[in-house]
Image (cartoon, rainbow, N blue to C red; front, side):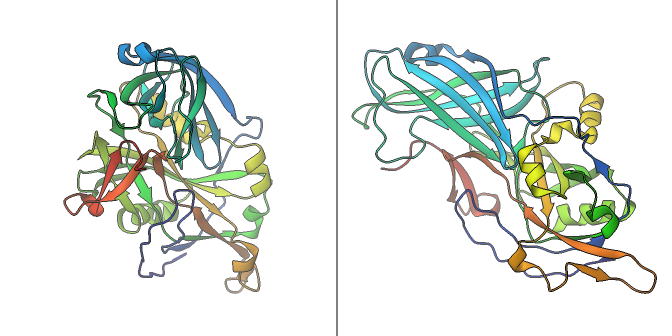
Length: 359
């Protein structure tokens, strides 16, 4: 049984680390959910091989590069050493991540100063670690190398741009979710699995941010399949893929997941690519780039937000049910250097802007 209630969605701008809670459906799930193998361990920090373009190598040496993943998303990091004869107040780099078969699976944009106003310049010979976050975004493949491009470079006086290169920067589809609730039987809700997968969809989003095709590849039940398609097509806000700042048609992989034991999930995090559904999809699509996985995570409501009883009885002879809400429902790409700016000519009246922060 599925019961859907609809509320008007009110959009507000929030800090990039905040989670938006807003949207709709309520459903009762069956017992054939997919769980992540308990024997797989979490991935924390993974160094990978870095390949620099010629312009970057003139000014910087990459001492180390890699990714760190946790339940909030994917962080790329690069340790840079200034090998030039001048100091730099800022630099912007673009990185494309590839797996062992050279398939593109992720991208990030980095800023030397990460938007901080009082960050010191990097003098000749000095090093600095820079980071960028894909919040709610995860590579569908295991990244093994990153190719880094120099996009912009600013000298110590903060006014002279030493270099600005033309690189086709790929930005993935991102999502602004809403308030959706899932009711599970007490039998399922009391399971010892840290996380269960609800549904996986491949979504084609056109340059206007409109869903052209929504293919639910996997679902725990037929009811969940119907609910998830409706959720993606009608109740989430989609921002199209971009090349540079130009919107274009692209695809997104959206995975709905259910957290049963929050502490265990945070301590032994399982990246979405460990899901059997993601592994199966990767095997079926062996060529070409893969979009990152957008993870929509349902969890028990915070204690202060729960109804008086965590369980409800749904009629004579029925089992008890527990409510789970969409807690992590948004994705952000390359925070904090990539920002949304108002633009009435763009989808959702917002445009991605890549550049030095205003000081």
